[in-house]
Length: 114
Length: 113
Image (cartoon, rainbow over all chains, first blue to last red; front, side):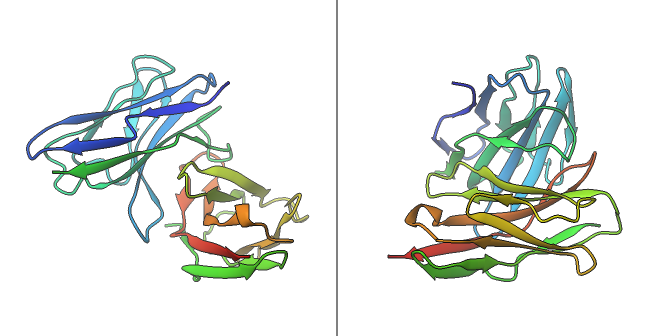
């Protein structure tokens, strides 16, 4: 089955620790996205990638980093510089990096701070 | 900057009844796309319906339809014959052809048996 997988489902971070959220897709999509979801707010774009080895900052990139070494994979690292990381993180992909395209979402990762 | 507003944080509907979720947006563009996404309790978002601004005909998808009023910048979602599985968060979203997608804050829909 084609789709997007995210792991882990739950992640706990200690103070000063970097953690990495995994996102993999087998849809052969060019574009991939990371969103942060907080209660009462819509999705906010953290980073996006239009093609392998290329990515751009979204609206709230501070304290986060990404890589896109393979078409299928777009991991997100939450660094210790992100002071309020507790949130639900959604990864998405689209066939082409255009706003007109439907986005396909993974099941999400909930990040909690210990 | 473009914005998307959903003025109803929570809505409820009786099973088998019809409900309309509101969405307004602000843009100076003439060519753009509008979406409704559903996020059920499982949290995995899926597309419900998509509308191209240049099309005057309202999009429909089975029990889901939209009322697209371009001049008023309004894009409401109508759910007919509501089912228990329709209970979810619904997000309205806007994008021009080549830029990022902007999501509204969402409306939580409850379906009463």
